[in-house]
Image 1 (spheres, rainbow, N blue to C red):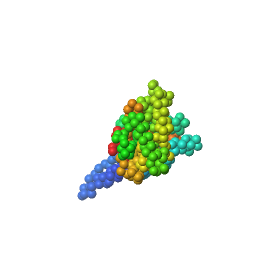
Image 2 (cartoon, helix red, strand yellow):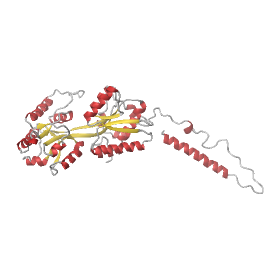
Image 3 (cartoon, rainbow, N blue to C red):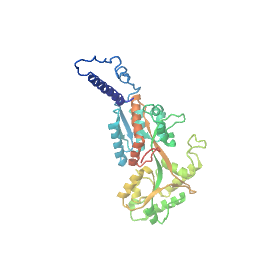
Image 4 (cartoon, rainbow, N blue to C red):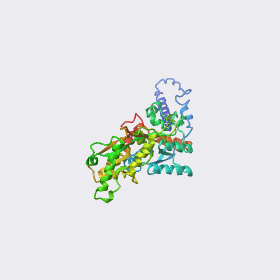
Length: 401
């Protein structure tokens, strides 16, 4: 039972006792010519005072999160996501009944965050809460740094109800579940890795429709690269085609489009030694060898907005940054959109994935305070607010947009 409820019951007991006392004082009438015998005063069993069980024996919390500071490392330090997160943190800090204070600390991009967490594990100077993709959360758990969430999720006072659990998309929730049922992460949102495509520039290059096969993809990427190499601007030589980031998300898209998988037939282990993986590697190498792909130092939104890239790959969460880039770029009226990744036989694929949040295992009080913050951040009402700021997809069915 919360402190507010105990305090309310205690005050109610006092007020009710005062009311009873006042009524007792009015029960004796004014004396008359023949005073009537006074009515007996009931003193044996005074109401509401004999057994003040709720005030004499308050429920004690096994773990008290009061006054804890929760250090929350994150990767949303720019744009509307940063503004939204700051508001959500401030709302929690001013409204939670336990006096918990969340300190949000931006760690840059996801790779920067993972490097910082790995270093913190080595030094022991850990945050309390951090996001991560499922593989990163599992790695940190195996290093002894991530707390198990089962007891927190099932706690009768602080946990989730059966309806709240059922509302989380099963695949998202399962991303944080180990084979033995141990829960090491909670889903906060989801997104897809897709292609961004400049329709206007493609039409000027002679293409009336986006690529539907990997061969057409190469044809259009190479045409854009050739156009930039042939114009009067030497600064754009070597650009124009596809911006290639050889990370796991992009490779997964191509593998799926090439009708492959990242796991073995039994579904119990990853495998890279497949014909589809080989075909993808050769396809991407061919793009590079022919000058039809290139790399950028950061997210390639400005490059595409200035016609240095016909096609790029991005999470759907990058849409607001793409909008801003085109608005500020040299071709603000260009028409652009999203595409799936095309395979050699016309199969189209996107890679959908969810991000998790893990609790770094520290004291029971710190872990509970971290869970209270995490439960608030992933609640339907707050998640509806968060996805509006961040452009992510929700991770549960009850999010009200």
